Amino acid sequence: MSFKQPEYCSVLGVHVTVGDMDSIKKCVLDNIEELRGKYICVSNVHTTVTAYENRNYRRVQNGAAMVFPDGGPLSIVCRLRGYKNASRVTGPDFMGEIFKEKGVRQFFYGSTPETLDKLRGILEKEHPDIQICGMYSPPFRTLSHEEDEEIVDMINAAKPDIVWIGLGAPKQENWMAKHEGRINAVMVGVGAGFDYFAGNIKRAPMIMQKLSLEWLYRLVQEPKRLYKRYFSTNTVFLIANYRLWKQYRKIKKRR
Image (cartoon, rainbow, N blue to C red; front, side, top):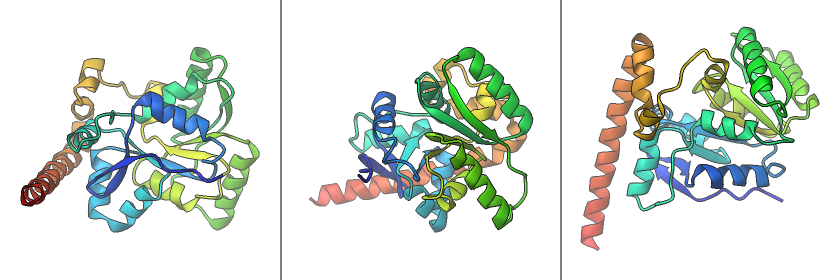
């Protein structure tokens, strides 16, 4: 049986899945067999703008079985478009929900050996029933065809249900698209999710998360690295969506 893509809202050309955490988690777990070989993107303002400006990356995003609205502005745009049940579903929050589930075999691909060791220790302490069937930190270089085949065989031999991909955007999305149909599990790109759970990066206070200001907290943590990215992508996101909103208003008035 093939997987039927859930309802989505197009945000700057990216097909953002509409729903809340409960409905999206249920969709993934209920269809875990149908999702094998497919991938899920976790999209924020930065990745959405990147997809808006880059056709190939947009094709990768829209090739996903689902695209979670990790960034608050994405779910806000969806609600303004009439999708009232659109809610923010972050990568770390989704990971946390799956960690609580019994019987889900999980593989972690990405980050560094040190982070993976910390991550395993913390997860096995906080979630005694978690089934971690494997972890692997790939080299920070282009892999040969033979190396790539060995990694695919290693992951599949572990028989995971979910493979968490922590390579950072856009590398992780491109990796998942390249390995679609080759990895016998659902792949989920979670960016810095490994670092959050390993304690390398602190998440914003809950009030900032609810106000969609987690990006501001990250900016304060890493101003040099994130200032240019947030300033440019946030500006493009706002301007592009405003223009689309004006076009929509004009069309609506003509009708």
